[in-house]
Image 1 (cartoon, chains in turn brown, red):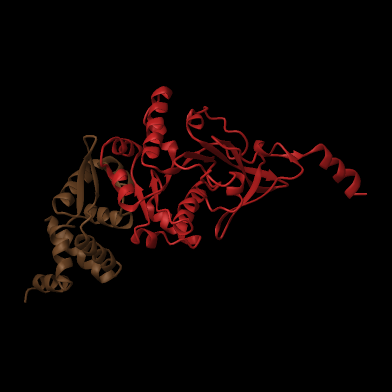
Image 2: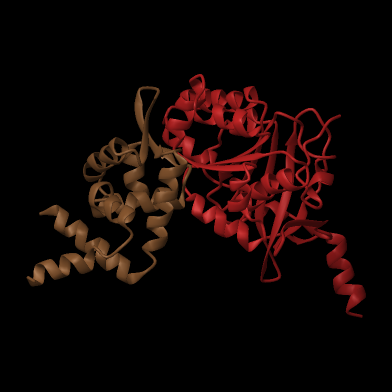
Length: 123
Length: 255
């Protein structure tokens, strides 16, 4: 077995739902921050600029990430007075999945695996 | 007359029973005087003592901070949210304004869905960034207050004052004219100790206590105590003894 295969298998040894979640929906560090922020502050609803400020990030970097989170069903995008406003999905099953992800992140081994998959996904 | 009780010991007595229903009530003070605590206590007591669900709209502090601060007083805001009795919304003044102007917006839907009766807006000071024109700003705040009343809410609106002690030297605002009641929280220095003072400056449509009371933030929230005896110039931040008290101190007690 190639060392790379072994590492990939070791790193993929996690809840399959969460593995899929990381590979396809929370596949960047900014998305990770945003998901955690909205999980901790679940009734936040605001513009890209303000959400970027809340998370200490650049709005230019945050905008596409928020849009992808909305496209993947983790966030809601509504127009308020013609301005796009983002908030956490109200779908219970998705919120439960987010909760499982945030709780799993309390474990260092899980975090290492999540970081591995995010970095791999970038290249 | 029907009243919306705050449930805060001493404050309801000063308000002659509580706020009037569907009114906007301004609480102003320097950082750390207890504006947010007073507002959270109003919301918490509304839920647990009077069965009135509450809403907190925050423009700066994260909801997470409210959960933590409330827990330090033994108020489980997370549980109340899960039970559908409380909602803490973080947003910005511009979105709140647009949301309230639209039909079926986020706040309107939440109020209807949860049966919200009380709201804490923390803080109104953030509206000042919406316009530098005082006339336009007055219109914006007036519209906002009216929208809260339209939803049948009794609100506490906090407002920051820059001065830690004494009178606030910042530009006078029209907000005090637009609200139904106006409560001032102040730091007071007495004999090298910082204490806190509360004064009800205005309560539209009702009489209220005119004296300046001491208050403390205890482990179970704000407790309004007795008035400052034998002192003058409390709201200046550095009061002095009254003439009569100074006389007693100098010539009778020390004889």
